[in-house]
Structures are given as C-alpha cells and as structure tokens.
Image 1: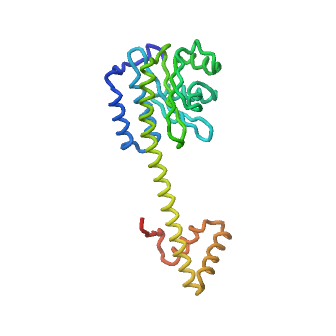
Image 2: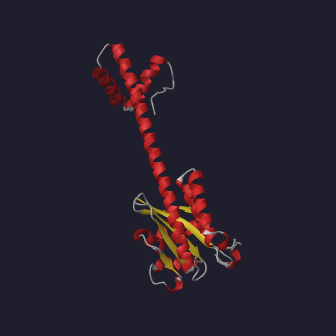
Length: 255
C-alpha cells in the first residue's frame, strides 16, 4: 500500500452518490448470488473513495455462527487485511460489526485499542481505517471495511458518503436475502412435493401387487427403507422403476 504501488483512479467527484446508487440497483438485477453482489459492492466503495495518492482497499466481513468471515473484497490486499483482522478476532471493523456503529480510526500510530492487530496492520502499510456496518434488519450481520495507506485518509465527508452508500447497499442486500430465502423455501417445497408424489406412486403400486390396504403398503415401504438403510424416497423410486422400466421418475404437480 505504498505510493509506488498505487494506480490512478478517477476523481471521486466524477462518481456522484446518485450514480453509485443506480449501480447498486443494477447489481440487484444482475448479480447471480449474494457473494457476487458483495464483491461488486466492495469494488464500488473502493472506486468511489479512492483518489490520487490515496488508494482505498475495501472488503466485506459477515458474521456467521458468531464467527467473522471475509466474503468479498475489492482486491487481494483488502481480502488479506480482512482475514488478518478476523484472525486476531479484534479490531475496528469487528468492533463496528458487533456494536452496529460506524468506527473511524484516523491514525493507527495514535490508536491504543486492539494493539496486537493495530501493530500488524500498520506493518502491512495501513494508516487509517473506516468501518461501516450494513443494517440487514436481523437477516445477517455484515460490515464494509475500508483501508487507507494515508493517515487521516477519510474525511468527514467521506464518512457521511460511505454511511449513505452503505444504507443503500444494505437495502439492496436485504432484498437479495429475501429473494434468496424465498427461492430456498420454494426449492424445499418442490423437493418435498416430488418426494411425496413418488412415495404415493410406490404405495399405490405395492397395494396393487399385494392386494393390501394403504397402511400395509406404506409399512412394507418403510420397512424396506429401514432394513436397507436407504431413504424412503429412493426405495419408492426403485419400486416405480422396477414396474415401469423408467430410470428417471418425473413427478407432475401444480406449482
């Protein structure tokens, strides 16, 4: 993160906040998954805040099962810095994540908190850090982490801009999470309906072959599943295949 490693960036004023928000709306429609969205978010944040002589590296950390994970980054440096902080288990970004408040460290050399991490981050060329949590309304916990190689690398205007930007991103991400949850629920329901249909077909076949009632046929099926240690649906599919000769069982139902 030295000056010689920095690449030219467009003037932040050329990327107004409104344009960034429109880009986020586009990402909601085009991102194949949440990780892709978060990666694009990190890239947008880095580009929005970087300027001549002040390259900003941006990453996103998500709290999963009470453990932080670096899930997206604008570049390899940002990912390494996020993973470094997660490895220590403490730092400004993790504090911002857990407390749900923006946290700015303008000069790491003057910071007394998180000393083991701060010393290591400074050795990696970091001089100032800005962490802004993403309010996901209980769906998850995430934080946008920004690193600068310059002391006082983030102005008050930068902080306000990132907070506004993060609010827009969180709104978009909440929508993606809702869509993902609905898609998963629909897939689970579809799988359950398919399994139930195949099992019902197999029970009917056993009833016809053995001239027994439904309860007896179902008991035969479950006993075979338990004896062979095979899922009930798979046993049912085997029964149908043995009768119909079809290797693939297709279940039809109204969506």
